Structures are given as structure tokens and as C-alpha cells.
Image 1: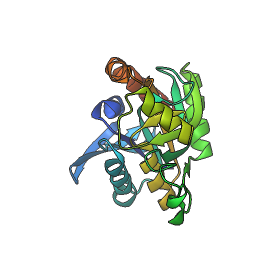
Image 2 (image 1 turned 90 degrees about the horizontal axis):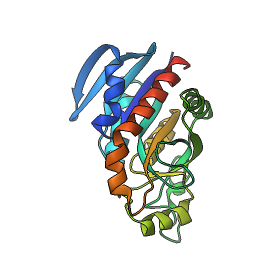
Image 3 (image 1 turned 90 degrees about the vertical axis):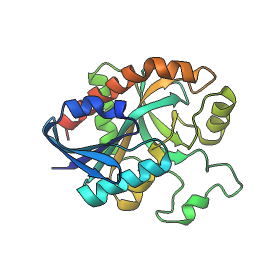
Image 4 (image 1 turned 60 degrees about the vertical axis):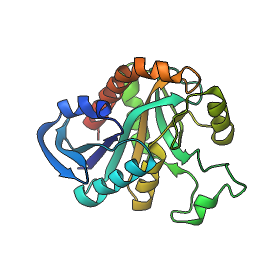
Length: 229
């Protein structure tokens, strides 16, 4: 049976899943608390990775190296980059870095290094399980690209620029680096994002309003997914 690593950038994004974990034990390493146990019968390691690409990448590598996870699910919230609206769910088909892709004439500079791609494809089975779990919960779901960068997208000008260069369904700060880490290690992954704002000039206000609801939706979906792994 798979051992599933689940990462959320903020404590609120993993709190509900932590409450649902049985046989829970905690390990403190590198300033992070890793929760090991079972959810829906699946072996799970749950962790709050912190915000941004470096935090998420190094925490994902810890899950793989120290805890032996062979499947990764990244949950959290995101701004919409396409037709998805607040409280809709976006499940990744692939992920890339919007703060690298299309910035320079050397668009594919990332592809010069292993694993020699500029975007990272999610595992099709995990994508399917996530989408099915959304439908079972009665949540509107979209599958599409996740665009990741080390910036909060809070203006229409920022969003329009990112969309023009990368064509994402959702814009956020951790998924691409988790996808990159998984691709390097040959670990299947999926990114699940509850849309909490429109990634535009009203993003800051709507994020505060919808953060809890969006994180709750993601927790419900992951719990359902784990029943079918």
C-alpha cells in the first residue's frame, strides 16, 4: 500500500486532516512537525511546509528521504487563473514556475537540467481520483495547469501577465516546486487547490474571507481520495 505524503503551506490547510488521523505520532525535524498515522485506512505523513518554493521543495524532499513516502498530495488554496471561481477546485494536470517561464528569451532554461522539462506532469491516476472525489462531494472541479511563483498575486496586472505567459487554471506559491521535487525523485503527485480568490485587485480581501472554507473543501476531497488509493 502507498505511503502518502500530504503537504499544506499553512497550518490551517492541514488542521482538519490532522484531526482525522488515527494512531498519530509526531516527529520534529528541521523546524517542522511531521504527523504520521492513518486517514481512511491509508498510511499518511502530514506536514505544514511553510510558504514559498524553497520551503515546499525541501519539505517534500524530507518526506521522500526521511519518511519514505511514495505518493505526494499537495493541498491548499490558490487564486484563479482561468474560469474557476471561488470555492471551485483545481486539480493539477501539470505545474510550472510563472516567475521563470517566459521571463527571458531562454524559455526552456529549466529543461537544460534533469528531468529536462519546463513543466511537471501530475500522475494521471491521482488526478482522476481527485476529480472523482470532488464530484462525489458535489464540488465544481477543473483540471489544468498550476502556475507557481514566490509572490502573492494581488493585482489584475500581475494576473494578466502570468496568464498570458503560462495559461494556468490556478496561481499559487508552492505546487510547482513540490511537482519539481517529485519529478526528480520519480514520485507520483497531484496538486489540489481550492480557489479562494480571483488573483486580482480584490484578492487580499476575499482570501481572508474564504480561506477556512477552501481548506475545508480540500480536506474533504483528500479524505475521500485516500479511501480509494
